[in-house]
Length: 128
Image (tube, rainbow, N blue to C red):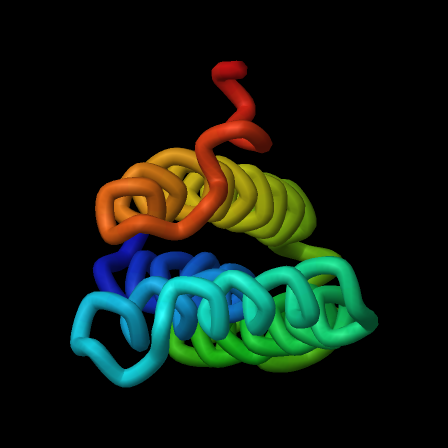
């Protein structure tokens, strides 16, 4: 995969985790107390905001794939039909890569950092 496509995948995974990332950052820089950050992440994660983030992530990935294929010379529906295998394989690889990166980033790295800064996420961690 082209380097620019990895930028779209990484930034999409970060966008999808924006329900938890602000809480960790605010506690790390002393901008919020642990209880305030925990309440914010609970509100963002369990509320409708998470689903809006997932939708924005899919739109972001769609736009990234559009730009990638346009740069590769696949510009019309006929080009897509001709390069169907490449389009399908690249799209599936991007979706699977984004989901895997999101799961690692959100449920492992951010969770460990959040626990380290004092957020009460240890009892709900996936390894418990």
